[in-house]
Length: 215
Image 1: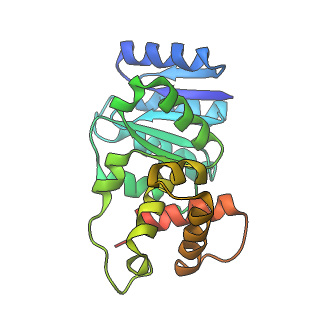
Image 2 (image 1 turned 90 degrees about the horizontal axis):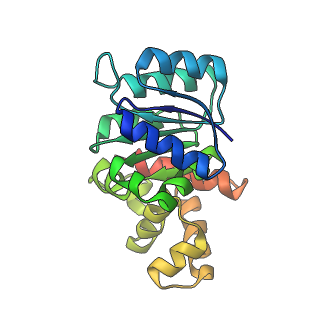
């Protein structure tokens, strides 16, 4: 799996390269600035991009904007964004095109190799990998007159764990319920969100996007 990595801090960039290579990822490019990232994404067509939000020369949202431009050129290009802090606007922008293959992790998660690599693989496969802190801070309003507001407390717990990229088995273990109960909750969620029958993985992504973009 070919990766384009963008991180301006040398030690972190070098550490990520070594970690990814240890798990059999091919590093197509490891860059430190927005212009370099833009060229790499346009020319190399990676399987997944791992991008720091803030890159030179602006140190604002250069990395995110390059990733968004690349997703406009190549719809569905998997992008995992790394950030020092939760930036609600950035997370919303990343999800705005309504497709999967997106992740938003705080940099603290990078130091857990298994968790980080799992997130990269999920995003590359077209799923989502949202940091629990990102999820909890994205939105707090749950209007009663929206489809999301009609979810039960348990259904909201299930969809929050779905947003983290958890499988039904993992959700069942976390909530201490059966996988059959989880399947029933996810079916109810799909119905309440008006998601027509289709591939379950696709509906999970759409449900997560609706959850994260509610309000």
